[in-house]
Structure formats: structure tokens, C-alpha cells
Image (cartoon, rainbow, N blue to C red; front, top):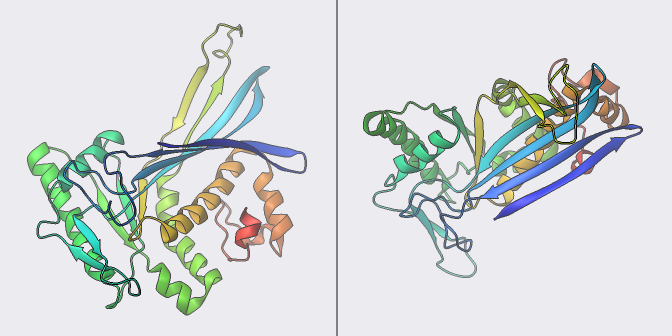
Length: 299
């Protein structure tokens, strides 16, 4: 299961191609309240991997070359054994944590280790920090699962993997500060992690440098760098909060991908939508230091 789509983005005469590929893990299928956390085969509910690819054409020695970059992230429910218990139709469901919440956890983290070659993973945890929802207790168990997972990977499987957590109470900050400042806070919180992670970048050409392009020639792919970390986003359901967070982050990274292509698209967007033009953009990355862009502007 998944999604694959692409589109050419244009501002004036400039444009770049963007593709989004999402792959849904099928090891824990089920409806919203029936597929939560880990199951007996170490599948996390609503677990998805997404990849955003941006590319544009240029000429190198008279040969057409496509410069491209990609960013990858994951999302899913909290990877421990827990469930929601519906007590009535008018109250929020109760979070119930299993007696052995870490069971199969090492298997889940081992699969991540194998898929990403041991690259570090940051778990961006959007659960609430309060006494009413029960999400605080789930966050505490989640942190324990990371510690338990790292220990078991090392002791039982001989694997070393950096697993860390970044907590961001989206509900509370949006309620207390409003949407613009909550978005600003999210970007400020994640900027250093995303910048450090960087992008996967490279070029692809119709033939090797100095070669003769022919219809049957294999494309020449050159990898410049590989993304250093993978970020995984979660709320309780891996739905509303996670959707919004993934959207906000992917749009910021999209600006940086466009900037590195040299397409001029990022500068055009900033001039068109931000007061003061490029003064509110950092010199290196595309992160906007003031939350003056609305969701519609980003769309």
C-alpha cells in the first residue's frame, strides 16, 4: 500500500519537478482503534515511510544532467504495546498500556537498523504533556522503550544504533500561543536536527562524462551525499498532529531542495509572500525565521 505522485512547480519561468513516494507497512493493518502500537510480529500501527524527491535539468559539458535531492521520514503510532479502550461515546478513549510494553520492541528497532543501515533515528513525539489525556504516561513508556531497544540491540544482536527522542506538545502550544507561533516553535525545535541530517543528493545523466549518449545506454548516477539521520513522527493515532507536522517540515525542506538546485524558486516564493523578501531566510538553509507564511502560501 502507498502513494506515488509527482508535479512540476513553477514560479514565473522557473520550475522544478517534485515527487512524493509513501510506503505503508502492512505488518499491522487495522482500523483506527484496532491497530495501535506494536503487535505480535513487531509491526507498528499506521507505520509509513515517505520520500520527497526534487530534480531539475542542467547541462554539463553539453550533456543533459539532472540534479536531484531526496529527504526521507517515517511516521507511526508509539511502538510499544498499548491500546485505546472506549468507555463511552461522549468521552475520550482511555489509554491502556500492556503489562509487558517492550515485548518485540528490539525486533522493531532491528528492522529499522537494517533498513537504514544503522543510521541514527530521531523520534519526534507530539503527545500531550498533561494529566487528563493519559498521553504523558505513554510518552514515559515510549522513552523507556528506546532505552530498552538500544540495550537489547547491543547485547542480543550486536547492533549499535542511536535512538533519541524530541518532545513537542503541539496541542498545548497551539492552544496557548496560537497557530503561527506554534509553527514557529516547531521549526525552531527541529531545525538543527534536520540541518544535521541533511539531504541525499546526486546527479543522473544519460551517459558517463565524456561518453556518447545512445538510446540503449544505461544512465550514469553519481551520489554526492546520503541523508545522515531519519526522523520519525508520532502522535497517539499517527493522524492529525502527525499529518500537520509532516506537512510543515516537508514544505520547509522543499524550499531547501529548490535552493540547492539553483532554480530560483525559493527566492521567488519568499519575495512573493514574505515582507522584506529574503531578509527572513537563513543564509544556508531554507528555514524561514518568522512564521509569516500561511498554510495556503506554502501550498
